[in-house]
Amino acid sequence: MLRITELKLPLDHQEGAIKSTILTRLDMAEEDLIAYKIFRRAHDARKRNEIHLIYALDVEIKNEQSILSRLKNDPKISLTPDTSYRFVTQAPKNLTMRPVVIGTGPCGLFAGLILAQMGFCPIILERGKEVRERTKDTFGLWRKRQFNPESNVQFGEGGAGTFSDGKLYTQIKDPNHYGRKVLTEFVKAGAPAEILYVSKPHIGTYRLVTIVEQMRATIESLGGEIRFQSRVDRIEIENGQVRGVTAHGEVISSHHVVLAVGHSARDTFKMLYESGVYIEAKPFSVGFRIEHPQSLIDRCRFGNYADNPILGAAEYKLVHHCKNGRSVYSFCMCPGGTVVAATSEAEHVVTNGMSQYSRNERNANSGIVVGITPDDYPGHPLAGIDYQRRLEAHAYILGGKTYAAPGQLVGDFLANISSTSFGKVMPSYLPDVHLCNLDSALPDYAIAAIREAIPAFAKKILGFAMPDAVLTGVETRTSSPIRIKRNACYQSINTKGLYPAGEGAGYAGGILSAAVDGIQVAEALALDMVSTKR
Image 1 (spheres, helix red, strand yellow):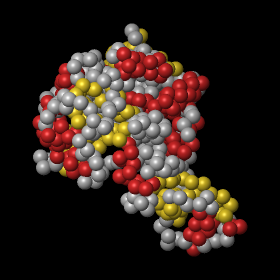
Image 2 (image 1 turned 90 degrees about the horizontal axis):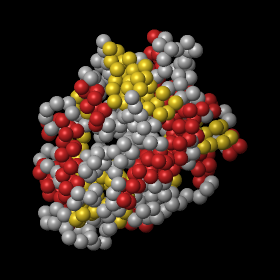
Image 3 (image 1 turned 90 degrees about the vertical axis):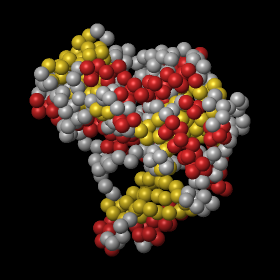
Image 4 (image 1 turned 60 degrees about the vertical axis):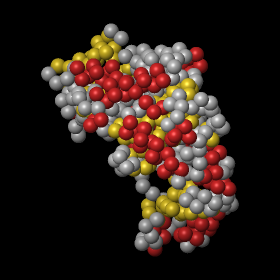
């Protein structure tokens, strides 16, 4: 089978245009074309009133070798690579211990799934509740201001990614096609098949709920065990070797533990640090959420093609390098979505963005965040967590101590005056937005950087600095503030048998990269279990 890349067609091309373009591109007769399928479909909207679709196609033809030889100098035509997944090993029957996976976010789920598929029957521990009960608790904060510290946007089955846009693309290098394995498993669990070929696939929150449930059922059917409301309070370490974990008062013996807790498990990080596991501070970003009418973004990005069903709701990705040396960028942009309360600690306020599969809510939202480094929060390795907490606790106070988010209109923010009423843009954050002046919500250097960046972004997206757009704060959980360093075997550099993984350990950012990291860690763990036979 041949792969043809960068095949460009008009957005409104006819159904038969792909076939005829294949025949022209390969200079072959129609009877020699057996079949084709779309491997990837993207769009080129650099000229917003002349948008094209860009295809990568896998084509089955007669006389493949002769055509490939004839077109050997065309870099856009090649043999289709083999992207099928192959297990690195299978569990022997004489294993005396089961591996433990801590966390059921994308990383933990895929680590558990791969281990189960290889026959290792993992025990998976989740501090929160199963996904539907967790959803009720999350809505309890949004609708009734009732906060559950163990069951919320951050904690529970599916991890933080369950309440997000459900983006399934990443910029990581993936020579072994692990990302294809992730997408294939999602489709098996009920995701729409289009995620296998659209260039920027997403699922959305409500669909993720059912997908997570189906993946749990698959893991259990293969001999895996998932225990909810089982927070790990202690890692048992002896002479630099993991011996097990203590969860819900029970000691579970294991020499192989995957740590996939996510970026908000602050008490777990503290426990690990106090247990001697090597941890270091790492950079992350802080800022606000900004909301505009989605129609404004659509018109700016797609012009006359706004509302085209193939294009869907428009996205953006922005960055600005400031005079004070800081960089401001858009983060986790959610087309047609909502801003959500995402705290994991009482009397703190944290924002994040979420979309459903349809992406049809009235507002577009995105984090507008400033990069910071450990130089901004010097001290011990957990100093970044203290920094986050100070901002989140202050946001709670600015919001009126009711879990409302502090907010300000963009025009007022740029002028440094308090907002008193909303304009054309009504914020989506629940339970409420309390208008104020956000000037004290972030350090001075961050406020100055964002004030410089918003007008600069308006030069790229007309209307971005519209006075009635709304900022809500604070956005602090952009990535983990720590990294639990690991070696080439994916184990902690000073604790054998502990496998730091995913976003919380500082090795991923987003659903797909976290899931891929889970697969890689599961493979390394399985090979070690087979070689050590324990």
